[in-house]
Length: 492
Image 1 (cartoon, rainbow, N blue to C red):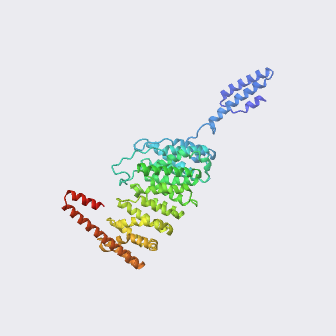
Image 2: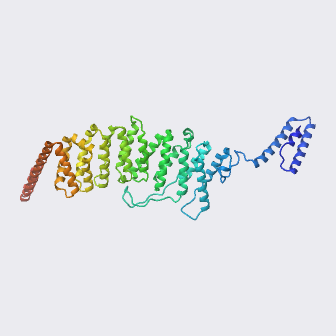
Image 3: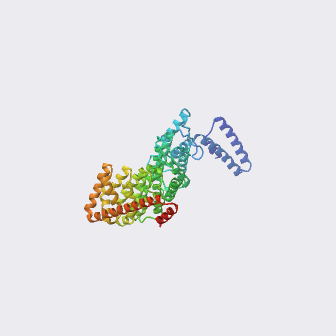
């Protein structure tokens, strides 16, 4: 029986088989003659099976032993082996090449690009369900290729001012773009379980990903925007951490460096995030408005992200109208004094906010607000003065003003009347005259009252100027003691 079993086992070669057969026969005869020891017989069989296993493993690699060659195509392997091939290809892509030297490793660079394309196509299948080793390999490869330190930015321009330099494009973009697309497709898989994937897309991974928003390459920031938005939507467990990390980036930008390339992209993401906030708003979300978004009006480079910032602020007010007065008070706090371009942006944002403000919230801030508007009406910058007069062309704002004309009209009347008569710019002159006509149509008696008040103020100013002139004439004629006595009288 033992001979029959051994005869059925595969043979490596006739010579080796003969030798093995002789040895096994000799061993079996010796064992049988030695009281038929069962233990020794089992040892012989076990040794022969080990030989067979070694022979078979050389022909058919085991799934836990050898790696599949990464250069194979996914079409050339069985379905059960495709994820092992995916891991092998991802490991091959861990090598990062230097693209600053265009003549170095060209063959290897092209080979890596082809492998990345194959991985991207493989992840495009809707039916794919990744194993945990495959998830780990994807995150490792993406991190190895994307996470890097950017060179320090040197500039001779004043801090925070936008530069007119052409955007810088990463020479390694042919590889980086594919890696971003792989990461985006990975987090977009319908079969991806966030509870499993969160151990690979963890907090350190997200922090390094957020740091990449400072890239000078606009193409990279655009890819990051898509990836982070998808991660925020899929991994609910990470949402609070992402908001906190973005807040810290903005804090550093506002209060320390005033230099960051990705503020606009981060705000664009949060524009859609804010629109999804549940009502009533949490305290954390209101703090994000007051401590993050409103202080973003301070930096000089606000022009790079003002459109996205305004959208986020408007989203908050549409969610909770009571926040309108908070936002406008913050806007007045950071109102620019010397920068006409920033004043134009603030006036534009102010108009959007006043279009959605409620009457009760408007009444809280109208005095401070129109004192600021009056200074814009008196501005020597034509565009600022023109933009301030345009507020009366907005029907909703005009209605708010006329509903509170007894408070607002006395504040701005003198500036508008002066511009309607004496302004040198024809456009400003016409706008001011139109506003004056609206005042007359709304409340003629109030216009007369305001004119009388202006005349009284002018008379008082004239009297004061005449007294001051006479005082100085008197001081010029008196001696030293009389000078001191006259000064004392003036002071009292």
